[in-house]
Length: 336
Image (cartoon, rainbow, N blue to C red):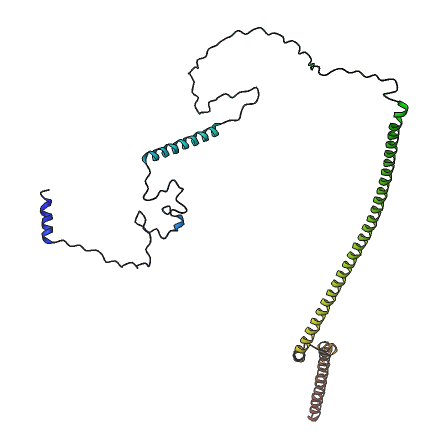
């Protein structure tokens, strides 16, 4: 402490100065942004998702109170207890629902079983005791008597003479008429039903025949339509082929005309050059030039050579004869 105080006093006496590196000013924004708790700008937010803003009617809400109103601490404590009790009941109900198992079937019961990783021996024994009681012996119950209602009113007798209650010959007629009438009606109904069934079968048979005829006619029409379609497609294909051939022929004719027109001036020049170069020749003239003329020249040359030899031999003979005669003349002219 004693050494630091003089240094501070000396600095204060000399004066304090501070300098920092210059830095450019940031561009001032048009609107202010919200600054978060860490000092960073969080940007603009939507008011519909801001928890600080209350939306809707606030008169019937418990968590929103007017600014001027203040609840009593007892009411706040009571509400907190109710909330804790409600949460406890909710947790208990969730626990019961989570741990509840289905009821056992008839003749069986549930037995708690340890499912932990390490089994734990249960040493707590439940206190049990047995109690007995004496009951009276079982006595058979007597048979329940039949119910007989009490008699009411007075008995009255009526005498019925033979033939007063029922006359068979007279009473049986309407019964027989009803039975016979019902039998005839049922028979007529059955006959009419059989006739109606027969008519229905006949109508069904006619309908089946008509249906078969219509199916055959439809099948014939479909086959005819198929044949017509195939014929039309074949004709269309033929026309396309003819048009294609005509187009190819026209293209070939046009190409041939173009080639003829193009080669009209080229052919004479080419043939002239080929003729000048000896590509086109007469085989007879060529045979005479190649085979006959050399042979003829060779033979003429041989004949000429023979004539020259004969001429030389003749000249030699003449010279020898002349020389012999000159010598003979010389010998004759010399004197003896």
